[in-house]
Image 1 (spheres, helix red, strand yellow):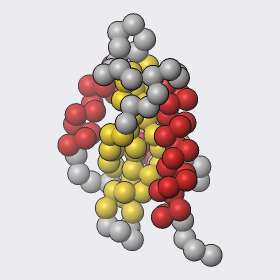
Image 2: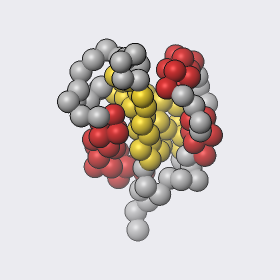
Image 3: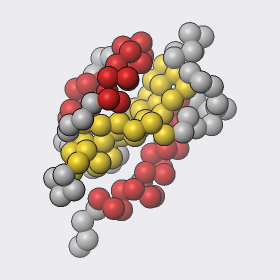
Image 4: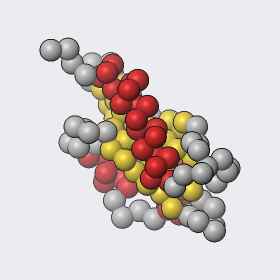
Length: 116
């Protein structure tokens, strides 16, 4: 793990809970000048719910995302993000984001899936 690599859980407003806690994606960012980059993986079935995050990230460079992170972390409202562990350093950013998404799907998503 390097200090330049970070991962975030992106969430949106959940009307039942009254807070921005519904997971829609994982964002991985590496600001190391030797290998800058970012990757986003979306929670299946949340495309419409994730409109705000898709608009926020559309066309954004890694530098722009890294610069916006402090503001996004401090904001309250319909969109939120929470920093999670950086993930394994030996994998690329997309894979690191996918690993975190696997955990979201296994642990968090069942909490937001309506019972049938």
